[in-house]
Length: 222
Image 1 (tube, rainbow, N blue to C red):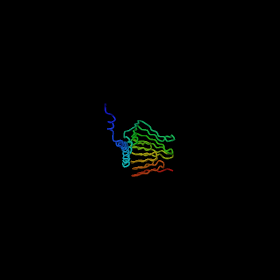
Image 2 (image 1 turned 180 degrees about the horizontal axis):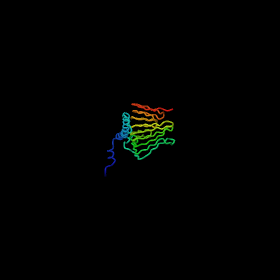
Image 3 (image 1 turned 90 degrees about the vertical axis):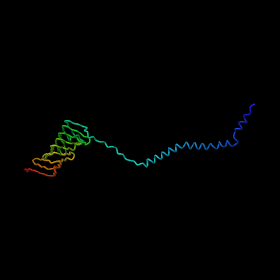
Image 4 (image 1 turned 180 degrees about the vertical axis):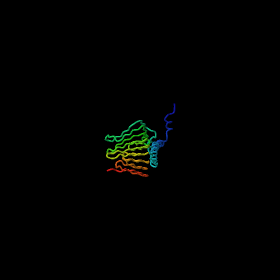
């Protein structure tokens, strides 16, 4: 007959009160270690977030200005045998420009015109007529640079017309002022004045001369 199985099991069992108590005491320690290991990634993430925030605060910032739009020197508009007209808010014609050719350059905002013929209407029924070999006109069509045999005529009611001749004349229809940047000649009726440079105010009719000035005035008859 085989020996009793109970005797073998009893021999393998731990002494009473020792093995069981030892296993029960080790469970809290393992639980604490498991919890610590589970929180390690969270602690690392919090630490990295804090370091990133600190770096953002201590790192100097630099303002980078947006690149300004570069205006090209390449002409973007060509005109041939053209006429350009400007109107005010009331729809009234204020200026018109005729030309053989016209080239607009974005970099300068000007249009170069060959053989320009200009007519501008100012206050008080004043009319300004100009012509030259070339002209530079701004986008607003208020400033006209006339070069090459430039002639500008001012016509006002109840006044003698004034003719200004020179190689370089600048018309500003916004202020109604004309400047001669080179030696010029002004004729009003039979009176003639020449000088190195001058400023003519169309509204008042006053002319300011500089440099060598020579004037010939005809006697007035009563």
